[in-house]
Image (cartoon, rainbow over all chains, first blue to last red; front, side, top):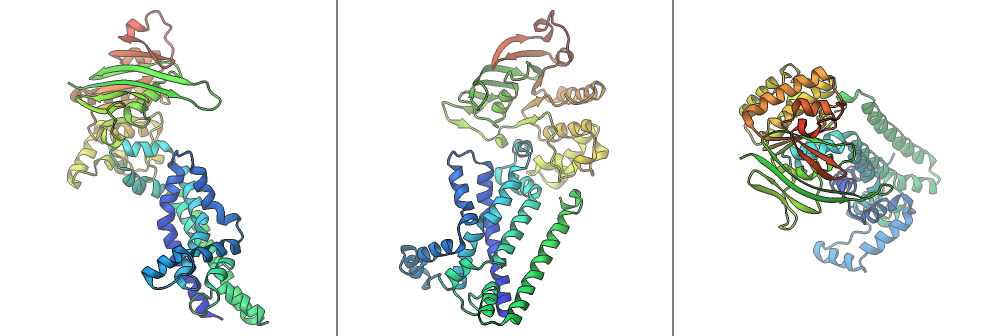
Length: 222
Length: 234
C-alpha cells in the first residue's frame, strides 16, 4: 500500500476543503443574495469545472501559473518558487477544480432560507455579518456540510488536473489516484487493488457518516 | 412627539404583471392606525419601504425627528438602524433558537442580567413565560405570534409595523393578543401601523384609518367615517 500517497491525498483534500469553506462561503452568499444583473457570469465561471475536461482546466492552470507567465513570474519574484509541480500548486489547482462542489451546495442552502428570517434579523438590529453567523449559517449547516464533504471527496479522486499541474513526484504531488495509475501501468495489480480499495472504503465511510448525520431528526441537526 | 411620516413613491415592474406604482404620503401619530385596502393595494410595499427592506424611488421616511430615508439627500439607513419593529403575517421566528433566545436576539448590546430581565418581563406581558425553553415549532400559531410581538417590542422600537400578523388566528385569540398589545402601547405611545383588509378588525381597533387602493391613499379619518355604509366583512 502506498501510504505516502494516501497521507498526501488526505492532506490535500483537508487543505482544499478548508480553503473552499473560507472562499466558498462569501461567493455563495453573493450568488444567493445579490441582485446584480451580471450574476449569471459569475455562476458560469464557478460552474465551469463541472463541464470542462480536467486536462483542459489543468492545462490553463499550468499555463497561467507557469514560470513563463506574468503571474508565474510575480509568484516566483515574491515567494522564490513556482507553483507547478509543487504541493501548493496542487492545492491551488484543486481549489479551482472543486469550487462548484462547495459553492453550489452552499448557495442552494442559503437560497432556501426564508427571506423573512433574514429580514427579521436585520429589523432586530443585527448587521449583515451577524445575521449570517447567527441565522443563515446555522440554518444552512447541512448544505454547508454537504459542500465541504463533496469538495473533500472530489479532491480525493482527482486525476487529470493533479497530473497536469503536479506531475508525479512521490511525497510531493503523487496522490492515490496517480499511484493507482502508476501501479496499473507497471502491471502491479495487487498494489493498485489495495490502494483502490483504501480509497473506496474511505469514500464509503465518509459518505455514510454524512448521510447518517442527515437522517437524524431535524431538531438535532439544528 | 412620536410620529412616523413617510412619502413613498415606488414603481414595481415584474414579468407577466402590469406595472404598479405606489405613491403615498402617510403621517402616523402615536397609537393604532389601520392601513386598510384590498390585496395588491401596495400595503406591504409601503411597510417594506418604511422599514428599509425595499428602497423607494423617491420620497422620505422620518421617525420622530430623525430622517431615516431621503432619496434626494441620499440618506438610507439600513433596517437594523431604523428603530422599527415589524411583525409579518407569518411569525418568522428563528427555528434553531428557543423562544427566549428568539426574544433576546435583538438585545445583544445589553449585559446578560439586563437582557434576561427584559426578556422575562416581555414574555410575561404577552403571556408566554412558560414557553421560554421551547423551540418555535413546538408552540401553536397564536403563541408564535405572541413571541414574534414580544421579540420585536423588547427592543423598544420607535415605531411598530404589523402586516396582518393575526389574520390566521381565530377571533378569540386575536382579541386577547390585541388586548396585550394595546396595554403595552398605553405606556409607550409609539405609532403602530396595522395592515388589514378586515372591516371588523378596523372598526374594533383603529383610532385612525388610511384607505389605500391601487397604490394611492384614497381616504384618511376614523374607521366609522370611512367605512360608513359599507357592509362589515371579515
